[in-house]
Length: 156
Image 1: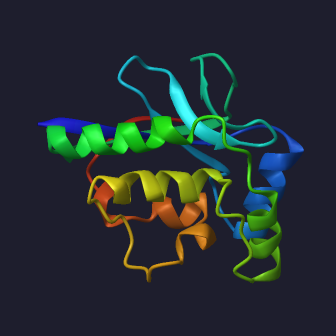
Image 2: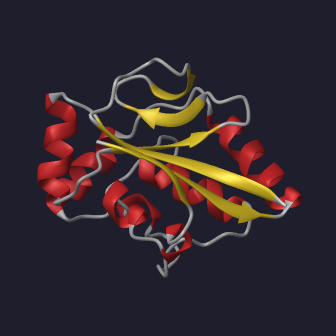
């Protein structure tokens, strides 16, 4: 059995505070923890990147591991790696602010990327309609029943 690992964080900056205020959330960012311990995610302003362990110092952090098959993990990681280099979807952020379905299909926000990554492996973290993925916030994803009982690290 393999594990798909997610990291939810809150950073001590105005972007994080704004995201949390607008989404009524404890969390402002979510990303994949790769097998080597680095992080793959969509982060403002640089877009989808693989980042080193020390790229930020969160004031709150929670990590989860979701049991999946080896095949599903391979599909999820292949999908996530194929997104590296794509831009951050600021259009989607404005859509969330305005409660509209605005998004750029060639760009990502963190929570939409993580949801799509799981879906690429046949794992559906939320009961949502097709096309709803861009509207998912870190807080919504954090409420997924797949995370219950699967937290292995919590700080802050």
